[in-house]
Each structure stands twice: as structure tokens, then as C-alpha cells.
Length: 267
Ligand SMILES: Nc1ncnc2c1ncn2[C@@H]1O[C@H](COP(=O)(O)OP(=O)(O)OP(=O)(O)O)[C@@H](O)[C@H]1O
Image 1: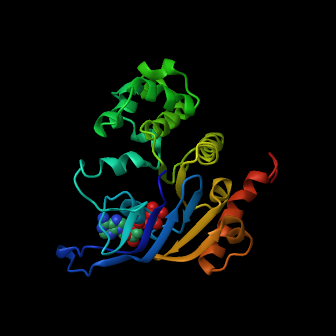
Image 2: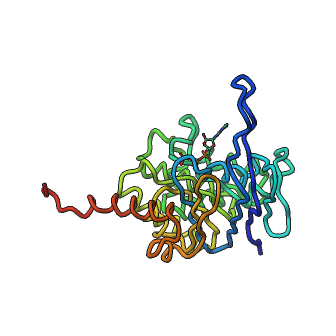
């Protein structure tokens, strides 16, 4: 059984740009988040608050200036591909615009098989590919197609299947539905919700939008200027935000909801 995925006391600064004679930019200040299997945690915050930087640190792609990342009892640090193979298999990333991350020259079979080969995952790869496709409700008949031969929605699911093929315990999804139209957004959110509730994956969902967070995440952490200013049940954050940053995000989410409810043809 995989343990929690925890970032503890993370601080981080991007190095000073020498040519600009600038100081190192302190981006994260003593940030802690803890993810557990079968639970969804939303990381919300305004643009530039440090969400993607924290995700990079959780993915062991950047080294914090202080603090630790650990999966269960095992500490994780940036390192070579071989030393991180176990971690890459356990923790997968779904980027913003997942479909855009697919190489158009590769078939679905090659796209899904690549991480299995790179991470030297044991077992029958063909069976793992089919299992991943089935989980995102795509037929195995698509394995020989290329992204250009699929719809936008199918490509989104292929990209999620790619993360699922290695059978991870955790998914870190950075704004996975921004830029999608509403029906597609709904499909992807339902899929992610099922992965948490039915398959027991742990999910970190990075989003600007608290309404999106509320759909799938029981817990929400609010990041503001590199600090966690609120961390608790999403319902509580929505109903009685305890920080000005959370209050502003609730207001923004509500404002985005209003036009959707306006009947067609209304002035
Ligand atoms: N490579 C870099 N070098 C220097 N500063 C950077 C670098 N990448 C990001 N930053 C700065 O770090 C801060 C946090 O960026 P980050 O991308 O983590 O925020 P974010 O909350 O994910 O924003 P967004 O919601 O717009 O994606 C920003 O001020 C950004 O300009």
C-alpha cells in the first residue's frame, strides 16, 4: 500500500538572473501539502501564486531550497531518470491542455507504450494499454490511430490514459480542463472524479477555479504569493472563506457561474 505523498515545509527561489542584476525571486515560503490515496486535493490560487512551481517540486523536477518531498517513508529528490523510475511510475502528471502534449506522429499504441518502456514497467504492455483505454472509455480499436484522426475529446482521454497506463498511485493535474469547452470539461472532470472515488487514486488538481475544485476535491489549499493561506474542506472554503484570497476566488468562481445560468436569449 502506497503511503501519503507529502511536501513538507517547502521553500523555493528561482535563481537570480545575472544579466539583470536581480535578486533570487523567493516563490514558495514554507509550503506543506499532503495527498492521500482515494482523495482529491485542489491547489487554488491566482496567477503567479506558485502553483506550477510547487507541482514541479512534487514531480522532483526542481529542488527546494528547504523542505522535503516524500512518498510514504521514502524521500524524493531530483536525480537521474534511473533513480526516479519508481517515483515516476507512482506519480504521474497531466499537463494543461493534455491533448496538446501528444506527439501527432505517434499512434495511440506508441503514445501509451512510451512511458511503459521508459519506466521499464513489468507485465504485458498490450494488456496495460487496453486496460488504460478501457478506463477512459475508449475502444482498443483506436490503438493504431494517430491524434490527428481522433476528436478533441478522444485525444484528451488518450492523454489521461497515457498517465494511467503505468498504473500510478497519484495524479498531479495542472489546470487539466482550462481551455476546454464546457461539455468536454465535464467529461474530463467526471473521469478524474471516478479515478479518485472508484479507483482510489490520489489527485492534486491545480486550478484557478473553486467551482471546478468543488466538483472533485474534498480538500482545498489556497496558495497566495507562495504561502498556503487556507487549507481545509472545500465546502467550508466555499461557504465561509477564511482569507481575503479565498474570498476573492469564491467571488470569481461565482461570477463565472452566473452567465452559464442565464437563459438563452436573455439580454
Ligand atoms: N523559470 C523561472 N524563472 C524565474 N521566475 C519564474 C520561473 N517560472 C516561474 N517564475 C515566477 O514564479 C512565480 C510563480 O510562477 P508559477 O508558474 O509557479 O505560478 P502559477 O500560480 O502556477 O501561475 P499560473 O496560474 O499563471 O500558471 C511567478 O512570479 C513567475 O513569474
